[in-house]
Every structure is written in structure tokens, then in C-alpha cells.
Image (cartoon, rainbow, N blue to C red):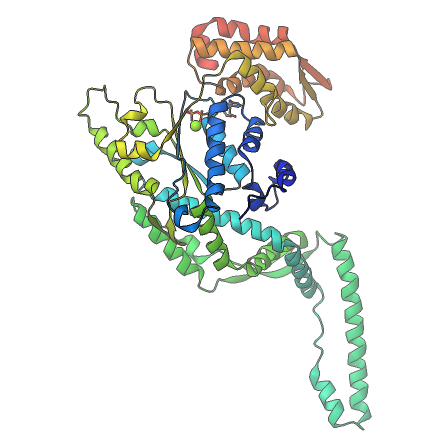
Length: 495
Ligand SMILES: Nc1ncnc2c1ncn2[C@@H]1O[C@H](COP(=O)(O)OP(=O)(O)OP(=O)(O)O)[C@@H](O)[C@H]1O
Ligand SMILES: [Mg+2]
């Protein structure tokens, strides 16, 4: 019941645990403040948006501690993020899902309008979410049983390399009945001896196996062939068809799989056998159960380009697509509102799935969405255009900053790449300028500028380059890019 106060210490240590463990419970304990500071590691600025998503996430946890009767009444804080392209909308949602360890899918609302409105049915997003959740839980469980599976695999490899002798009961039984027959007991002795030898060689073999001395040796083993269902394709434009495909595949996977003999190295065999053993150790029924529960309690659906399905009120109207746009909104409504969606893993309730929608809303406005849908997205946050100063920080601060990425890439070639502060300032300045003069594509501009700036270097390493250290300075940036920036046409094409 209590929102464990004492665990605050552990919670702070979470970012490290994020990459591999399975502390989903601890992860959901993050306070809004902590969520924002974790997001700060990757996203510069956009305080309001970070705050809103942090609150929405925390409210889900709070809701779980509310008494039963009221709990179901509490609706998720669905959010619409409004802002120009490339300012961090998707990035915020993606990072949020990651740190919450929640099942997450990103869909483009406009996809549902393609092919005259039958592009993909809207419910498919929930099916994808469940699939994603199943994969997530399954991989968590795999981690849990990995050690156990590895031991079983060792045993199986040993069995292939040195089959164990049968500890034949018969000889013992016959020994008991014909006690005085000395030749019988001699045979039994012989048998015991070879058993002992076998046991010892297996032990030695196991040591060699563990020391990695046998990894390249080839062995013959049974491998499971492809899932027969895998060969089957279900054609059809409708979402229903996908569903049928899924069901068929489930049915087919129940059929015995073809096994065939193959020669593989021990290293490869280890991998194959490990998959098999892990699969056997995992209880898929309970995985699915947990996965569905995860979706219902903590799933996040990110609907991008929601503005594309809003009909601009000022437009001339009466055009064909508007009807289908509104149709998509009407289709979205029950899902966002909360309904049961049939998936191949079972029914899923969407009542408490968190929906984060986003769009530039250049032409249409949030108020152009149908009122019912607007009501389902009560929180609006605006993301700001990025400034030169933001670009400077984006280049240097985040854990995944572009400059860090490029340095890491070149370090693999033994080249130490650094940027002078002046150079970074200059890149930021150019990005801001090109965004202003050509088109504002936000932080994505930094990618195009960096690839241009570093193209030659990237091409010439390793053959035509002998220095161990390159420092990009302001002069180099200017030399390489200023003529492009000055020429509007040129920058339109290459930046
Ligand atoms: N505020 C920011 N801080 C750090 N990186 C950012 C920021 N904004 C954008 N980026 C980087 O720019 C790229 C594009 O950002 P993102 O995908 O979030 O854009 P978006 O706002 O979703 O745009 P669109 O409307 O086109 O979908 C990403 O690589 C992201 O890392
Ligand atoms: Mg986006």
C-alpha cells in the first residue's frame, strides 16, 4: 500500500539498472522529480512536457494505491504534445517508456488514413502493444532462467560428446538373484569400472567445455526446424486478417516441429540448445498473463502526427479525406476511452493505457479534433522551438550526444576525435541559422550538419589518415560549412 519512502535510495540508482535488470516495480516508483531528471539526461529543455509526462506516469502508480471502488474511476492523464518538428516529442515519449519499463508502441495516426481509411485498423496498435509486452516479459524471464538453462545445456552437450553409459539395472538385479554365479558378478564389476571411467571422462570433458577449449569442435545434433507456421502467409488488407494469421500461427506452433540433424560447432550448438532450454523453462501462459497485465496497467501508446487526422476548421472543407480523418478519430475514441480489444493473446482492457499524442498542429488545431477525443486528451503541453543555446547543449550534454557518438565511432579506429568549444558553438550557430533560413527541422539539423562536417574524415579513416588525434576547431567548421550556409540553394540541398 505505501509508496515506499525508504526505497528512494534505490530509485535514484535506477538509471544503471535500466539497461538489463528486471526491477520493473522499482522503476515504477520513480517520483516526478526523478523522472524529469532522468529525462534531462537525454533531452534538453522542454521542461513543461517533461513535467506533464512525469505526472502522468506517477499518477498511474498513485492510482494503483487508491481503494478499489475509486481506482477504476481514475482515468489516465492522456497528453497532447504540441510543437514543431524535431524538438523532442518522440524522444520524450520513448525515453519515458524506457525508464518506466513499460510496454510502448509508437504509431503514426496518418497511417490509419492510408489506402482510403482501411490502411490498418486502429485496434492493431493494441495488438502491437501486447506483442511488445509479451516479448518484454519473455526476455525478462529468459534472464531469470539463463543460468539454469546454461547448466542444462552443458549437460546436453556432454551427452552428445560422451554419451553416458546406461547404469543398467538388469545386471544388478541378476546379481541379486544368482548370487553365487561368479561370472555374472565379474561382468557387473567390469560394468561398474567402465561406468567409473565414463564418469571421470565426462568430468574432464566438462572442464574442457567450461574452459572454452572445445568451442570450435564440430558435433552433430538435432535441431528444431522452422516453425511450420512461419512458412504461411496470410494475405488480406484487413486487420482481422492479421488476427487470423496470428491465430493460425499459434495453432501451427502446436504441431510437432520437424527435427533435422546438423553439424554445428559447439559454440553454435550452445546457442541453439540454450534457446531450446530457455523456452522449456519458461511458462508461456504466465508470461502472457503478466504481459497483458502490464499492458493494462502501464502500457503507453504514442500516437504521432495526430494533427494529420484533425480537419482544419478554416480549410475549404468538403474534401474527401476529411471524412476518413474523422472516421479514424471515431475509431480511436473507444480505444482511448477504454474498451476490450481482442488480441491473439486474449482480451485486453485499454482503460488505463496511457496515450500520448503529438503533432505540430501547424494547420489544424487541437480544437479541430472531434470534441469527444479532445476530452480524452485533457493535458496539452507545448514544446518550444530550439535555440542556438539549446543546440550547443544538445551537442554536448546528453548521454547520447552526437559529439559523443562520433567520438566513440572513431575510437574504434584508434583515432581520438575532439571538438573545441568554439567549434561546437559554431555548429550550433549554423544549425540555428539554417533552420531559420531554410526550414526549421529542429535538432535533426544537427545530424545533417555533422555528417557534412565530418564526411571527409569518416571517409579517409583508416587508410589515408595517420594522426591519432583530431581536434575540430572553429576555423575548420567555418571553412567547411560557411560557403554552404551562405548559399541558400546549396544549403537547401545538402544541409
Ligand atoms: N530537446 C532535445 N534535446 C535533445 N535532443 C533532441 C531534442 N529535440 C530533439 N532531439 C533530437 O532530435 C531528433 C529528433 O527528435 P524527435 O524524434 O523527438 O522529434 P519530434 O519532436 O518527435 O519531431 P516530429 O514532429 O518530426 O516527429 C532525435 O534524434 C533527438 O534525439
Ligand atoms: Mg516524432
